[in-house]
Image (tube, rainbow, N blue to C red; front, top):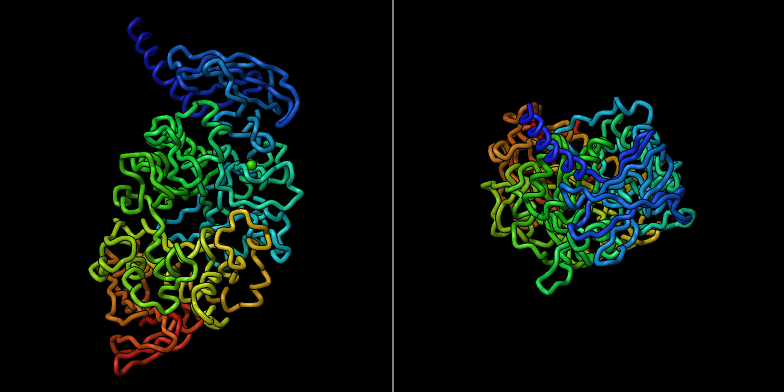
Length: 640
Ligand code: CA
């Protein structure tokens, strides 16, 4: 018996501190609240302060927390009574000095501007029916991702949306209807955790930021709520948004930015565990692989644990369907694989497989070239993106869309989803001279995102003397390449409205006049939305365009011999499970004049031609000499 008790005590000692360590902060109960915070082992004292408000006023209670003797780095305190509605901070003393108050790294609810943690009853934030909310069942191969910023999407009066720039915008039927009509089945929302650059006390003034400046990783941003002073409101409204999108069969993907923080000195990381979470160079300076002045150290046990638990938390508490990792190439491979393992298989994970500078880490980083070592994780393909629109380091340089030859193999690389394929000459692929994906679902296919110029601006900047007619043709051609790629297609919000940003290529803090979507464009250029709708509907209905398996792509997709600025391929639809079409030919012509490809003689239904795309068929074509014509600057898709 004594031995059993000893054994239980040992197991408890092993388990208890770890489970508390995983998510520190506050554990609210109506009769008592337990607080915990993790520090470095040389912390001398930790003060816990309780406040009436999220900002301002004096502490109503200050107590010294107790160090957990087993862990040495965990500090705890329990306060009796019902603290619901109150706020708290931690203040840690190192080398005889208190570092400064903060809500710790594990606040799940905060006051305005995220300065203090909030004590709330989390279950009470659930909207009606939340327990029945489920993640829509959509395979990675079937995803069509729509990247959006809350403010871009709804801020303009032309949106007809009531809750402009808010989470609640995506609960409104008009907004949902637009997404459903377009046909996308996943929204990737730009940073929606609490970030610093929008002052939540001045929301009556127009303020804009993308939000890549994290403060509290596990709390929704207050600026997107209808009342940032009331801590439950942002949580409930975020859940309402997820619930409404899920009801419409649309997944919600969160843009997560664990690779850097808003600042170092004031960050919750630094105020609880100074210099633990950040990488440093040999000379003691902070490494800057994020390009934002600091870079986190995912390889450290505490940072890795934080990332894993944070991602799990968003899945559990907010029913999030996927994560887009900002500068994933700053993180180490082991951490990314651990995150993959920690969440259900249907959670879609992808990221930027690059960094913005060199990282102070000697191990393997989660770069796109290493994606084969990270099964179940995808990376953006800048090969195809830049082969279409032009290189990232010069806005005025054109590529395939501008009639520049030499980009064909990079486009083919994107068509097959970055896998090994006998029809691609990898020596001619830009950036990557080798395939990196094990499966095509490990590659994100896209031509534009929030970064760099949007498609309209890029075409205007890079294609000399472009006319409106050409602009539309090339826009549609570009998205046809994306939406017929075997990778996972991804589009920037507003491309379906032919959005522009007045030529601004880095609009992270530009005013609404640059970033807003003009919904009137739906009437101005109805052919654009019509085409996008038709294109997406065709992709969804035809497994040939998203086979989801590298072997199947290698077996059933073969490239046609073509000339410069022309890419064409054939899919044997007969061997693709669920596919109704037989021989499918897809061709992209970037020339200013019509070109031809050679196909097997016969009668074909034309489903995409000029500026029309309709899977029901636009016309038919019968070939006798094996030749089919592709009009200038456009895509052609035919099948029998
Ligand atoms: Ca904020």
